[in-house]
Image (cartoon, rainbow, N blue to C red):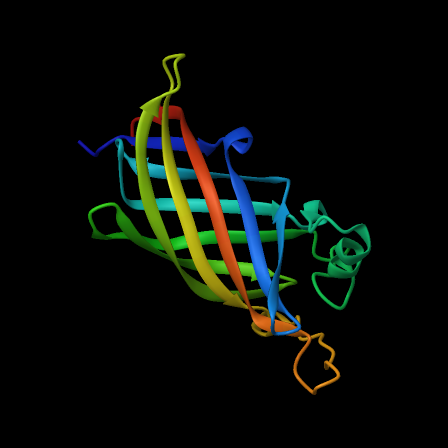
Length: 183
């Protein structure tokens, strides 16, 4: 008999997707995506070798500056009208040490799919007070935006790049069990 699988849904009320990028070489611009969804399928209640799927609504980008958000949605960056979603699908989810995992998968932005590797820290589990077990994770990684066709930049007065190419990603994710199925 095969082990049963468990499907976990991302709880958007208790999760966030953040990013930061160097601006003028001296500081970071930070932002977030307000709309996203996804799920994790595991064997039983163990997350080893879990399968992760995640989708982000590009038009939900928020850098606390409407003009910049509009520019990020334009053809210079995400081209949100043509490519409204960023997607990620894992290819492996391996425990490396204690609560630390490496997650590899395919990230698609602006119609370009590339393999990425992300660090995942498992924060543990807790009953939410209503009989629902929640699991917490922090996902971090670096993505080079130029690899996804987002090479727009401008030079500073001193000849440096106005924007860095590497985007630091951080997601705080809380999962709740959806269903249990016999495989």
